[in-house]
Length: 296
Image 1 (cartoon, rainbow, N blue to C red):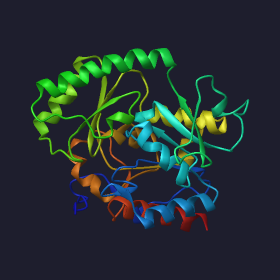
Image 2 (image 1 turned 135 degrees about the vertical axis):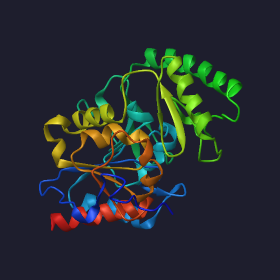
Image 3 (image 1 turned 90 degrees about the vertical axis):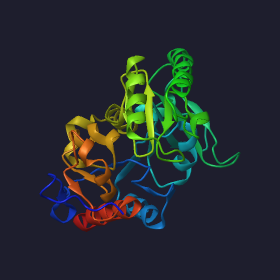
C-alpha cells in the first residue's frame, strides 16, 4: 500500500473536498494502476465504467499501452474509445456495417479490426500520423530500442512491444525491476535520439511526433463529438496515477489521482488537484461514486 501523501507534504486535496461539476460531460482516465489492479480491471472499476455510461457521460481511457493490447478492451469495456500509445492511435467501437462516410471511421487511413474474432465487435482504428510517417518512424524507433537494450544494463523492451505501432517501451516495473538510475538513462537516451520520453507506472515510453496524452484527448473529442476540448475542459474529469499523466493534471481543472500516485509525487511538476483514498481500481470507483452522487 502507498500511504496517502500528507497535506503538509503536498498540495493534493482529499477527494472528499471535491465538487464535481453539475454539467459534467465526460471522464478521461489512465488505465494501468488507475483502472487496473495487478494488471487486470477489477469488478468495482468495471462497474464504475458501466455506471458512468448509464449516467450519459462519455468515458475515454488514454494510455501508454499499445494499440494491439488495447483493442480487446475497446471492444468489451463500456467506453466510447480508447486512445493508446500516448495519443498516437485510437480504437472506436463501430456498428457491424460498412465504414460510415462521416465520423472517425471515415478517415482515409482508418482500419477496421475485429479483436474478438469474426462476428464480434468491430473497431475503427484511427491515427494521428499518416501511414508513410508511421512506417519511417517505426523503423527508426526499432534501432533506438535495440541500442537501449544493448547499452543500458538491465533495460528490456516491454512484453507488449509486439502490439506497438507508434512508440517503443522499456519495462521498469511490470515484469522487470529497473533501478531509478537506469530509468533515467533510458529517458536520456530516448531524448538524445530526438524522441519524446515519459515514464508511466510500469514503462518508459518513447516516440516521434508531437502527440501526447493531452493532444490525444483533444483529438478524440474533435473526432467523436465534433467539439473542442479546451472550450469545455472544465466539464471533464481526468483520473491518473503517474508522471506520464502530468500534462493532463496540469490542463484539467478537475483532475484526480488514485492513492498510489504517492509513489510519484516527489517527481511530479504538475500534480492532480485531488487524491482518492483508494488505490488503483478502487480509487477509480471512488471517483465515479463522487461523480454520480453529484449527478443525482
